[in-house]
Image (cartoon, rainbow, N blue to C red; front, side, top):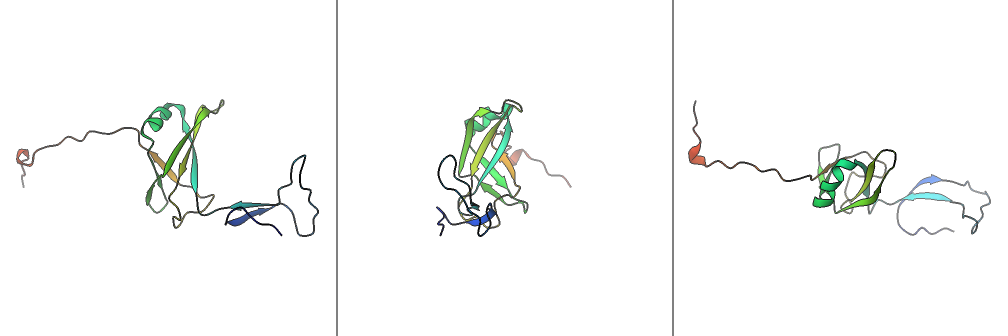
Length: 130
């Protein structure tokens, strides 16, 4: 009998019923792969030029296919870049039990990169014609 460390779904089975497996050193043989639906997260590769702003603001949104945007609960920038692509991995935590999200899905990510200033115009300064 096997007991998983968390609730989830089986995504891959490495051994079939009746196969012999070996536990322990040199390396234990994996039996199954699990995916949890509770604490989902998104991993994205970001160019080196955008990392300074992401580290400064630590804010991001995940946009689903239906247009719904979810604010990331946590933004983690890995402290090293890929030597070939010069990109950093950024991991975003998602709100717990978000309906419609499953492991392996594709989403869009929007990072805060600065604040824009919107000019304010007094209502009395506007002229309406027509």
